[in-house]
Image (cartoon, rainbow, N blue to C red; front, side):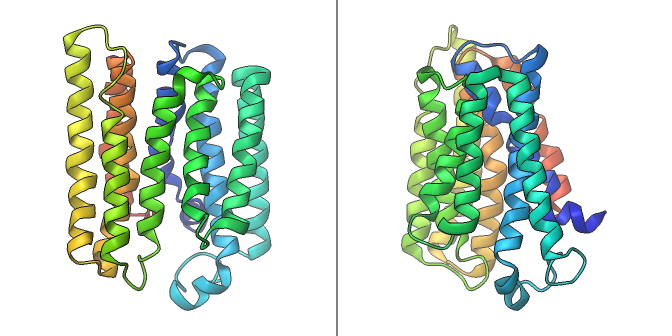
Length: 282
């Protein structure tokens, strides 16, 4: 069981549930009834991507990360690929049940983006853009593809772009220039928390609070990596970036007029960090 949990980075899915919630909040659609299946669809796509990631990287991991499930022999390559396919199908099914035809269209594009990133784009100059597209489409999944969700989709996309650019140095170390690129992505994402339709000063202050927390935690780790881009600092910044998606999502939801939803999202962060000590999110 632990091998499969490690394969899909199971606890890290807590950082993806808020994508669809932020998208729904931006368009004023309550996340209730069958729509509650949309965050589960996001988790399925995330887990599928992680399984496909390890399947695609199995030869490289045998050299750089032999403790991972596939090179250590705890999970076969074929089983990992099958897991990615099954979880992708589950994500499509959940999206169709939760959001109907419009959600199914966005989910299909998201599934294609996940597979394209893991099997073709990762490790190429287009890789960060591919990952950004995955997160942006995940936000749009919760919004039914509506244009009102463009700002939160752009924010999560910019954040994912920066984290992906930096993560390439997790094993051998990165560069100051790439760390600065990641820091710029964080600044853009944090800036997009400010505009919105918060109906009261308390909602705007809540959004700013989450936005400030996001910038302080993610930005500080990336600034440390920019000063000293060692493998350890890059890994720490990457982990901070993964967990930083939660306050970013919460800030976007609060700025869209859903502070209670934002508070619920933020409650996932302590649990995600605690579980990360047992199963690495990177």
